[in-house]
Picture 1 (cartoon, rainbow, N blue to C red):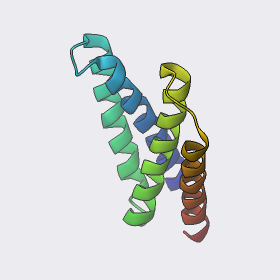
Picture 2: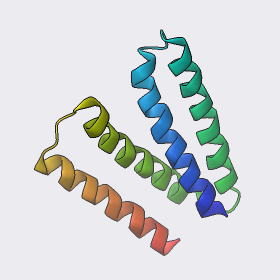
Picture 3: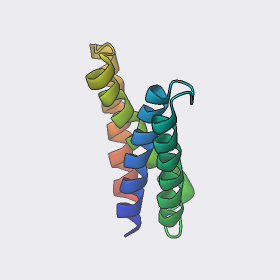
Length: 104
């Protein structure tokens, strides 16, 4: 279950990171509320995963999921630039997340 909790925590991290953009510096009420809920949920599920996963592994994977998801949604939702070097960096992050998962 700890890996499931970590995946859910990562998904909520993507949600609150994107929510920050929509909240416009916490000036928009609904996006701000949803962002805060996402933050709390993300930390809650991360804390559940930490009951049995090493902190270094869990934190790296959690931030990796958040980074990858946020970059991809930034490209899709906000038309952020996509280029070869950006994709190469994402491949490195994915490789690191997979590697940490395999050795844990």
